[in-house]
Amino acid sequence: MAEYLLTLDTSTAAGSVALSCGEQLIGEILLQLPSTHSERLLPALQHLLKAAGLELADLDAFGVVLGPGSFTGLRVGVATVKGLALAVQKPVVGVSSLHALALQIPCPAHGLSVWLDARKQEVYAGSYGWEAGLPVLTGKEVVAPPDRLLESLSEETIFIGSGAEVYRSLIVRRLGSRAHFTPWALQQPRASAAAVLALAALRNRETIALEVLEPRYIRPSEAEVMLSRQAGDNPIQG
Image (cartoon, rainbow, N blue to C red; front, side, top):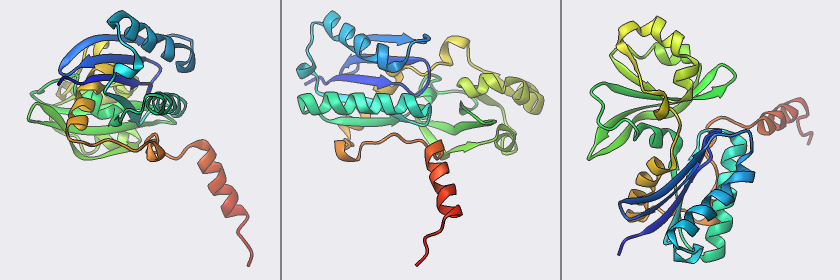
């Protein structure tokens, strides 16, 4: 039986929702607008379901991009999926934003490096190869200054993501003709790419219990940093 899957990506300003049935994409909405994810996410998914003649209860599972990415955006996406999944008692699978972006450059001839702008002069990054038709992370997902990441890159590499655009001139200065970039339309994360990974995770029974479903920030939030500093300034006296 084919699986109806609704997948959300709110890891960047370009939020998107995809509806798929097995290995067929039914529809996708991607919007990068001044409005927030909270304002446009539910109307977008409601529009997709209505256009397909489906109800929430008809879905078999939900997919959600867990991060890394925008702290606020990720919280909105995860909270939305939690509420929907709880309402209709359907399972949830989570995928990486970097992994989903890597999928948009299938079987590259060169190395593939995914960079998302993390601000503060850093990027979220991951390097990928290909295996059995899907991207495979080589190493770990990291958050680091672009200069440090480029120190370990010497071969021809394809760069994709908002971080690659922000630091494009730096990348070219360091790698010259060995650096390659994707067309602008492929720079934005897409829920349809995340849906491919979500379907694979669902079929592998890699569902996540709602009580432990959380965004994957990689970098501590400002609130966590502040609490850590306060704890250091005010050690508990015993």
